[in-house]
Structure formats: structure tokens, C-alpha cells
Amino acid sequence: MAHILVIDDNLDICQLLDRFLTKKGHNVQTTISGKTGLDYIKKMKYDLIFCDFKLREMDGREILQKVKEVSPNTQVVIITGYADVKIAVEVIKNGAFDYITKPLIPDEILLLIDRCMLAKKESHSYSVNFLRPNDMGNSSNSSTNLPKDNYLRGIGKESRKLYKEVQLVAPTNLSVVIYGESGAGKENIAKIIHEQSSRAGKPFIAIDCGALTKELAGSELWGHEKGAFTGAHSDKAGQFELADGGTIFLDEISNLSYEIQVGLLRLVQERKLRRIGASKDRSIDVRILVASNEDLRKSVQEGKFREDLFFRFNEFSITVPPLRERKDDIAAFSKHFLELANEELNKDLVGFDPDVLDVFLNYDWPGNLREMRNVIRRAILLSNGRTISLSGLPPEVVYFRKFNFKELDEDDPQLETVRNDSYSSLKNAAAGAEAAILRKVLEEVKYNRTKAAQRLGIDRKTLFNKMKQYDL
Ligand SMILES: Nc1ncnc2c1ncn2[C@@H]1O[C@H](COP(=O)(O)OP(=O)(O)OP(=O)(O)O)[C@@H](O)[C@H]1O
Image (cartoon, rainbow, N blue to C red; front, side):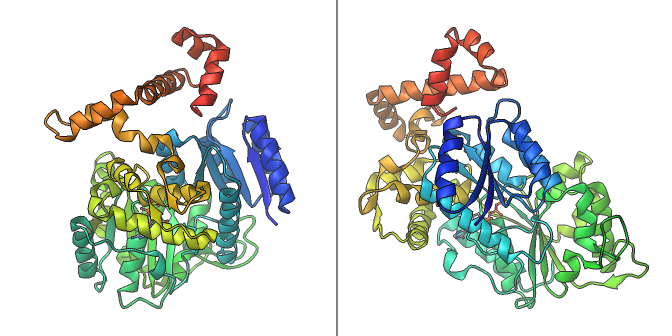
């Protein structure tokens, strides 16, 4: 049984989740107000919070940030409309456990709760959840958990280049900066580097720096002695000590505060650390891999990241290409995620309709492999047949190319076909344009419906209905 809080300003969703999850034996509390949600979080300990991204007085970003401060052990799942997948990517970077898109599918929710509880159980010996819960359900703090069966190398040109670099650097002791968009597979690459090094068999600890609050960071990374500060009731080893002999993976490194950067510099220079409140240093042998989806050189230029630390980390760098640049591997990744989801959901779909793969090839996958895995898992849940068809995919994925044909070069041979396609499905094109304008205006007026209706020259009720229709 999980203690779950649902924050959604749509009362129907609150009631539906309340009934459904209570029936499944969970302890559920709901609220339509972000502020009330925050009050609950201060008073009660929840395992998991489902939070709509667009609340009236605040957004899911703020709730996530507050939860990380007040109750770091609680996992947060953000509910978004599919069109918000870029926002979903951002909240994952900031420490959300996962995102889920509307309309909600009951089985998908149950699966998420199971994954969340499993990840919590596996990292129960640690006090906070900045330890990265693996998306496949394995926690990262073990020595042998490279998800061999869950992992696909890819054989396309970009993938071959990537693995050549991995092979080159893995057996060395060099620090590596792993660049790549969210969901592209940076953590997987870090695990492979660890597994292919002489440190394999020793701990691999992944830390999500985006979820590490300023107050907790020092004690979690370096550890503390009993009595070092109020609440330090016993001695505690930090993550670097626990990773001794192995590898530490610092995800979203550019989020680290200046003080922690200073501590890290000392560690990489002297290979020593001192627990908070301790009088002696400890020698530590840890290989450090870091990941960033921003150019760290730029962060250095902007004064956000220490140059000396950057040079220490940047002994080698690898860029994991985004999925849209791994077109040769899209069919293989799709099949792979289909097999995984079949197993996970106890289904036996045999493949994809041919037009589905076309759509996958034409889509730009802002959430990369994580997004593809979610899209396929969801399509399996929605499917009644033996294959995944277009009807199981989110419209934004299906119509992506059509709505974006302006981005094609004038001499692109596909342009004519795409244009014809779009005109023949004028209704879809019109709906896409309407949704895009609504979204833009709503964002400009910070979702103030009165202002948005005035700007758009429609009444509030029409605006409300359209927001519902397009899930805005
Ligand atoms: N080569 C792969 N084969 C199969 N699945 C993969 C592969 N690489 C990544 N994935 C899956 O894609 C999802 C995202 O991967 P991962 O967490 O490594 O990405 P990331 O770049 O570290 O993301 P973020 O920056 O958001 O932390 C996970 O579910 C992971 O298991």
C-alpha cells in the first residue's frame, strides 16, 4: 500500500483517482489546490504525489521544488497534456520521478506506483531520493545492475560512433563529461563505462544533482559525524564514501551549488574528503562521471561553474545523440521497447502497423528514449488488437510532421507529399493551429482565463471548452 497525494484542479480527476486507487488498497488524499497540497505535504509523509502541471495558483514546477525541500523522500509524478512533453522533460531534470500524460490510463498509473515503490524499496537504506531511481525500476546504487536485457546498443552510424568512444574511455580511469538531451541515455552510458572498467563489481552510485537541495547536499555527499548539526543523531557515510572503489555519476552537474563545487574540487585534487563535523580526512578512490544537457563551457563563461573543476572533469567528453539523430535505430528501439512493455504489462502485441514506424521516423522526440518508451507502453495499454496502430499514439506525435512542414526545406522531396497530406486532413491541421494559438496566448497571460478569452475574442466558456478539448 502506498500513501498517495493527488493535486489536480480538475475535481473529476481527483475523484476518479481517489476511488480507483482506494479500491486498489492505497491510502489516497486529494486536493484541487496547490497551496492546500503544500500544506498537506508539510504535515504528512507521502510515498508519491501525482501533481497536475497546470494548477491555478502555481505550477507543478513549484510543487516539485517545495516537495524536494520539505520531504525529499517523496516521489513526484507530474501529470501533463501530451503537448507539454518538453515541460515533462524539464521536470524530470529537476527531480520528478516520471511524468504521465492525459488522458490517464488506470493500468499505467498502477504500473507507475509499483515502479515508484520498488525504487524506494531498493534505495531504502539511503535517506533521500536524489539517488536516481532507474526508469526501468532498478535503483542505481548497486554494483551489478547494468540493465543488460533492457538495454540496446543500436547499430546505426551515430550509435556506432558513440560506443567506439565508450570502449575507448571505459577501461581508463579518466573522468568523463557525458553530454546529451534529457532521456537520451546518458545514465545508461555512465553505467556501461563503469561496467567495462576495472571498477565493475564495485559500487556505481548515480546522483541527481537537480534534486539535491543546498541544505542536504553537503551531508549527503560527504557524510557527517554524530552531533555535527541539529538532527545529526548518528554518524553517517556520504555517497562518495559508499562509492569508494567504484564510480559516482553526477547527473545535471551544472545544478551544483558553488560550495559543493569547492568540495568536489578538493576531492578530485587530493582524493580526500572530510565528513561534516569530523576532524580527520578520509582517502577516497572514486571515478567521477558527470552529465549535463547544457554546454559546461558556457556555464563556465557565465560564471555558474568553476573553470578548475570543469578542467578536472573534462578529461574526456562524450555526446549521446538525440533519438531524432539515430534514425537508423528507430525501428530497433521501437521493437525493443515493445518487447519490454509486453513483458512488463503481460501483453503479447506482435509489432507495429507500417504507418506507425513512418510516424516515429518523422517525429522529433524531444524526450528521446524515455519518451519513446512511454509512448509505446501507453499505446500497448490502449490497443485492442495484435499490433500498435496510429490510433494508440498521441495526436501530437501522429501529426507532428504535418504541423511542422514549414520547417522542411523548399527542395525537400517530401514537402509536396506532406503538404498534400496536411491539406487533405484540413480538420487536423486546423485543430493543430487552433491548439497552438490557444497555448501561446494562455502562456502569455499565465493561464489567466479572463485575459486569454479577451485576447482571443471569445467568451470564457468557449475558451474553457477548447482548453478541455485540447487538454491545455
Ligand atoms: N540504449 C538504450 N536501450 C534501451 N533503453 C535505453 C537506452 N538508453 C536509455 N534507455 C532508456 O531511456 C530512459 C532514459 O535513459 P537515461 O536515464 O539513461 O537518460 P538520461 O539522458 O540520463 O536522462 P536525464 O538527463 O533525464 O537524466 C530510461 O528508461 C532508459 O532505460
